[in-house]
Length: 382
Ligand code: HEC
Ligand code: HEC
Ligand code: HEC
Ligand code: HEC
Image (cartoon, rainbow, N blue to C red; front, side):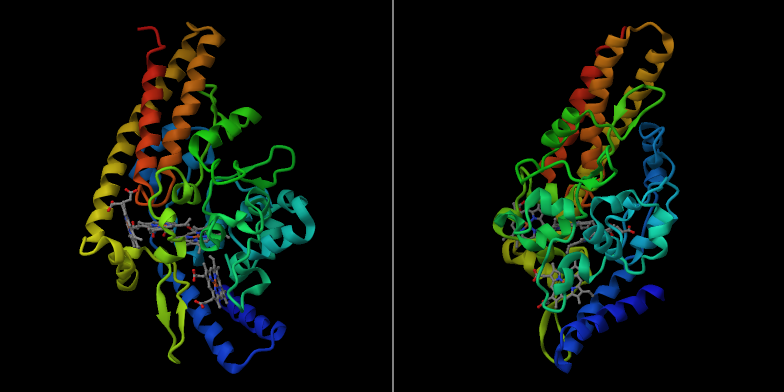
């Protein structure tokens, strides 16, 4: 209820700031109503129940306690408050509420280390008009509002990234918190470095780890939803042909008055007759659901295979540490391979399309993870 009210306030505020005709008013109301439909995407599952090996590989980190799949934008605030993962600082609100984005833009990076509960109490709006349009939302102009995205790719979006990809990539991206001041940041500076190998090199160079796992002693990384990376990165098929996130996830809709606009209900293209007609421009009479589901089944089966091997590596390493039979140098060599293998596994696993965005890159990550696990396993004394 609270969120609905605030959407109404946001739309009304637009009218106060930008004097507009009644037609524009009703047009914005249509956009707003389409965005509110994201509440219909409420389905979520526990990844830990679906893939129990995750509890072992994430041991010692919050994701071993609670890891639910993503759902619609209407739930972001509720879900961040409800998670059992620790969330002490306001930086956890970076991708959850436009109110926090405004605060960062007013006070700078100091906002990221404020207390979570204090900032949350004043956050009323989920991901909102401001998140993707700044204060230009009545015109529909796309604007980067997240400071780290502006730094990484420039507020002209580097001239090379379609705005309807760049705005989504502000949150649908891998990120980390800077050790010195807990500010949110991304591990890349352009399209070329939006890549699993380049991002790992970035973290290795700065000596960054999300946590040091107690049983293995490995300084591990936790990847988060690198969607902009798979959409723009090596092996992408569609972005090169000019398709944006909006082209595949936002339907063309018409208001009662006959005006066309992009629905803001962010859908799977498989759930939309209209979006499937976009696919058919190139995929002709292919059954798209079958094409996508076949690919996803292949990738998720590989994830289970590689995830279970990774879990076995973690157990073998923990046992080696406990045995006292290995020198620290020997253990560090295996730990380094463990960190690399887990990075590549996770980079694929946590991407939300399950291989649909870029199956070549998904396969490459899983193959690299598996080769690295095999190499590490070869270092244990038999
Ligand atoms: C300000 C941050 C932010 C921006 C910008 C953003 N998203 Fe999201 N998006 C999220 C978060 C956070 C979730 C997960 C919400 C949850 O599970 O509570 C999400 C969820 C989604 C989902 C549902 C995922 C599922 O598994 O059901 C889709 C689809 C989606 N976003 C697409 C987009 C597209 C397309 C864009 C650009 C037009 C975009 N998002 C821009 C933060 C953002
Ligand atoms: C060529 C079309 C295409 C493009 C471009 C595209 N996606 Fe997707 N996306 C898909 C398909 C297909 C799926 C899998 C849908 C399913 O499983 O039902 C998907 C799944 C997702 C999901 C998981 C939620 C869901 O509905 O399954 C999210 C989140 C998402 N995409 C976000 C993005 C973002 C953000 C961008 C841009 C950076 C983007 N997508 C670009 C086609 C696309
Ligand atoms: C998650 C990002 C996101 C959010 C949140 C968002 N928009 Fe948009 N909006 C877009 C994108 C992307 C497009 C352009 C789609 C395209 O044509 O490629 C767009 C287009 C528009 C347009 C032009 C419509 C058209 O099709 O001519 C208007 C107006 C607009 N948005 C208003 C709003 C308002 C009002 C809100 C808040 C209720 C809002 N948007 C929230 C991403 C967003
Ligand atoms: C501009 C042409 C074009 C459009 C529009 C288009 N595709 Fe594609 N798509 C291709 C081409 C070309 C390929 C590569 C050959 C193939 O796999 O069919 C491809 C491949 C794919 C793949 C396999 C991707 C991978 O990495 O293995 C999926 C999934 C897919 N498309 C889904 C979609 C969906 C869903 C839509 C509509 C929302 C869509 N495409 C719209 C041209 C297009």
